[in-house]
Picture 1: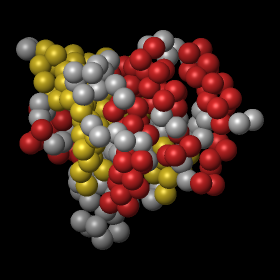
Picture 2: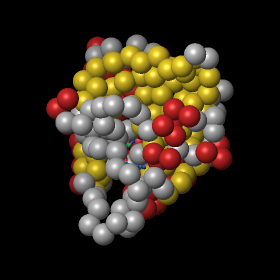
Picture 3: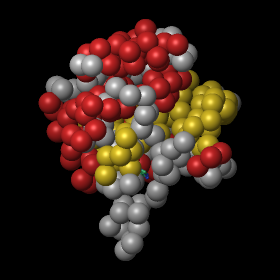
Picture 4: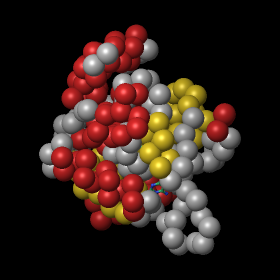
Length: 219
Ligand code: SAH
């Protein structure tokens, strides 16, 4: 089956699985996922599965990308922060929906490849940074939306991220220590504090503090 037919089949599956926001479906339709996976996996680019991208990391499953994007409720006026650029796929989907995307990745090699993809797709509203996304991006704060694509522990999201969330802003983050016990959690900032909603169970690679070269032997 050609990629185009597979892409349509995937979009139908996303719709059946609860992705109802037409803007999100449109963004997924317009981002060629085959450009974000290693060549050896090109024929699986439109399967609804996570795939390895090197350095022990993965490009997220399309359904998870779609549901997290939908949960974030992004619009074209928003300044959005993504933590965990990885392949760049989730970032490219967000870039189609928001005014400006800031995305941070701790692995320099992954970031360089992702930057090439953003350029190739002419996503000129994306700004990247190599660093520890747990510190957020203070110079650009506040953000109307923050999406974290790696799981943090159970207790609370990184304080820098909630601090950098605008009033009325939304943070979507997978939480949970154990890979089998993670949930996507949505935080909404109001004048009086943060409202927390547990959305659905999920499996993500962990959010890791600092840079890989900052401590010998770090993952
Ligand atoms: N959004 C990505 C998913 C990548 S997996 C995609 O669509 O492909 C999660 C990514 O988060 C990995 O690349 C990992 O290196 C990165 N990551 C983990 N902890 C991080 C941190 N503290 N700061 C920045 N990136 C981090």
